[in-house]
Image (cartoon, rainbow, N blue to C red; front, side):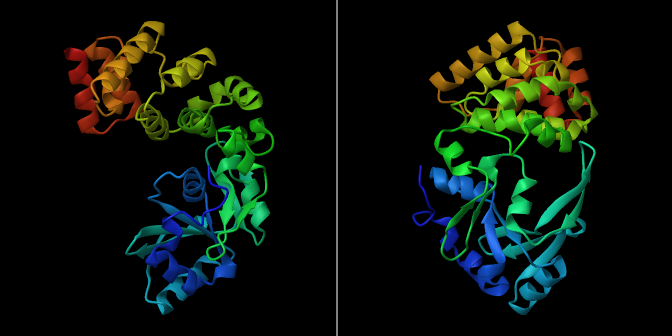
Length: 299
């Protein structure tokens, strides 16, 4: 793992350099997945930017620099800059005022550490200065990343209470990066698994399919079943279905077949078109994915 981003390609992209000039290096930081993946030496596609500027100031600064913006989530402080290198989400520093497990009421902030404190995992709360590329690490994220440990910021139960989807995000990140399991995170996810019932089906489906698209999510899904999480989001996935998924993953690996999350979801279900149709409806899958899932059950 790298300890800085000086050898990473993405911070030197022309579009990001232009954005830095437009907004001012002292007023922005690259944050989140791009910083995390850059330190791991993983190819970076999406870049997020945090700023002390208000959304209207971001729009004005970009306009004066000839950079087009779209107010994609301006009520939450997010403006998207359209760059030649790809879009960049620019979000004003925030703090949570109130949460209900699904959405947060936020207030704008001026403190980088306060913004970091509202994020989910330590490895996602790393901020990089756009010019010096110095990393600001407020919660030990660098050490966790080096250990491949996914750890909630502060109290795991509090972070989950703020957004119940963080349970599924924890398992997804753990399946992707994890080596060392965090006991507090594991216990909190098991204890609060029932809160997943209140989430929108589309959000659950998106997380589940993203997890299934990873190279080998089988061990993580086994833990999710043991923790009672899989029983909430996919009660049809019994031990026999998890064993079927393990065989499918082994077959894909042996034949160099790319992971297909819908095919893997089908492996997690009993071979019944009725069951597949029920699951597709419950997860509100798009028509194409629904047809593929049902078709796989019919074969």
